[in-house]
Length: 579
Ligand code: FAD
Image (cartoon, rainbow, N blue to C red):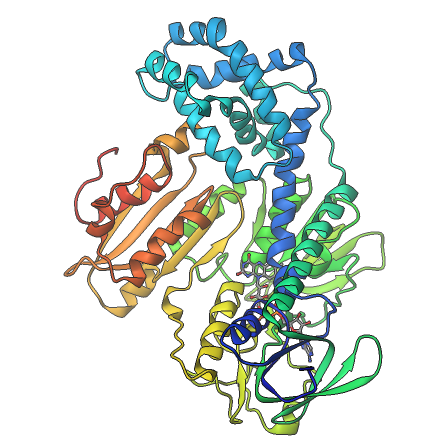
């Protein structure tokens, strides 16, 4: 059957909402066509959003590893001895260190070097897994000899050297300050921006082609072109190759996503004044980058360029960064970013932009009005939010109702004001997140197929992928207070978590809010290097209506960052052990 025969489901937009809806619909036995204008699937998320922004980050990590790979030959490898010395000093007795140097180190070096060479293509998770085994082996605990010897006898000991390097590679952006004191010396580490961009493009194109493969596997018809409603059951498509085709469907899902929100008086040229899309493709590292907007996208992109050497200033109209964040965690987070040299100008607005010179001159003034000043930048990133995208879709042709900010209004079954027409993802109300769009997509087609769909919007996790990451689910303390429910707070700092200390990446906290009377968990907020992974334990707990005691009495493996979640849960109704 072709796309122009009548479909059970037509999806306009191939982003995380649209492509997931299309695959799920086909899996449910519905004849499905997906229309996408970009020519590649995956939407904002895969092409110019979540994935490329993280690829930059991940690539930076790999780049840092390859920086170490340039240390060829045993004699150079031995320059890293003081690094191990440094770790050892932190946690072992002097005699243990000596032993480490004299007996165990050479073999660790050999194994570490092999692992290091393999690590170029190894997934980062594998590397970090071994890192902890290694550091544990190096003697976080007092029984240093016993544990190190034990691990030396096992296969896992092949990891430690490369894992320690991976950890230290995390500190690349601080290299000139931190590495010498860790005893790691190098003659030259360079950023090859073109190679970094090429790596990003390769990752994106592999992933988008992967979705095309999934479409084929699941027999989803894919029409490349711009779709426009001509009736509630027909979409006219101007195809990318040229020409026009009409796609018919009993059910049509609007999954057209969102676009960058512009600021009045600030014209985005994607060169000097860029959106997040332009910020993912800069050809040079700007010396000075000004980010307008302290939401998660602005902070993530600011972090990427900050790590690569830009001086980053974030200008924000509101009094706080990331308004949706728990205020206590937010303060901690801001302090951490400031330590990383990110500057903040809060309660400040941009009132003028001058691009006539070489760089950009911004005129700013206090949000409440007052004296103006200027701020110079090589590049300005406008990151003031995103807006639903329905341009040219012809919603007016069929009478789909929208709210004041242009979002498609839907009911709890994702149906718009027009029967048979649905909306999902960024184009409807709710958090503008890829995983929320995916959940919408699955639930929407389940309803269409006569099944029960369900999305619990109170339990959608949010993650800011800076370093450390900040992740949360459920209510903030301010929201709980406002609800009038009596509550308890349990907190546990990563400074008291053995794994975080062992890898010397212990900035952060777990904060759990639970109802006083029932101990039911209301919200969890985590700042940690891997908070985006840690949060899912809390998401499941909230989903199942768990109490903080349920988490605290669940055995957590040692040594892991997850133990901090357990201890914060203990602190909610009792006392934690390690603090
Ligand atoms: P989109 O992904 O926007 O997809 C909509 C698609 O519809 C687009 O491909 C568009 O070309 C197509 N389209 C539009 N109109 C038509 C038409 N008329 N005909 C045919 N096709 C059309 N979210 C996260 O969860 N985690 C993150 O880490 C994260 N990071 C981000 C980083 C950045 C820099 C940005 C910009 C966003 C990020 N997001 C992240 C948000 C995430 O990208 C979106 O929430 C998500 O992509 C929304 O999915 P969607 O399917 O609703 O819409």
